[in-house]
Length: 128
Image (cartoon, rainbow, N blue to C red; front, side, top):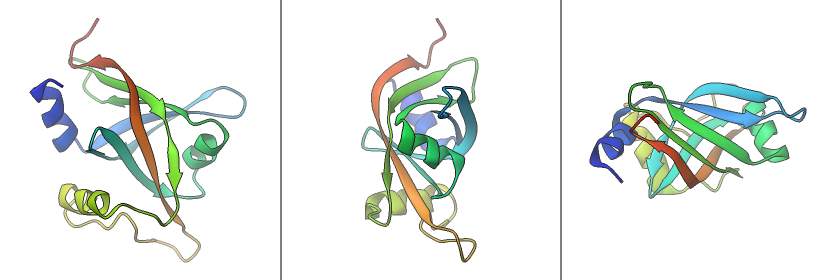
């Protein structure tokens, strides 16, 4: 992978995650992420729309926000409930100033991790 793209995956705070609703329409949201070992990881509330969408249809797309040098990937997401890889938890804490991706914010919150291995890179730093 191009070193410029690798650097962006390390330093950029947000990626746009696109999931598919049950009716086939897209659901797009900016999320915090880490890219670890060729896999995107996203922490979220287990009751969120994005998690419900992934459970029904695991196909997702991800796009970094820069329209000049786009980085766009597609893959199949998996939901992790409580089996969070320690290296990924540490990567979130390092990237987001100590943030604990496993910590709940409300009593009824259930944290999950979305694991998204890249199925294919659609754009990797150059517009077509």
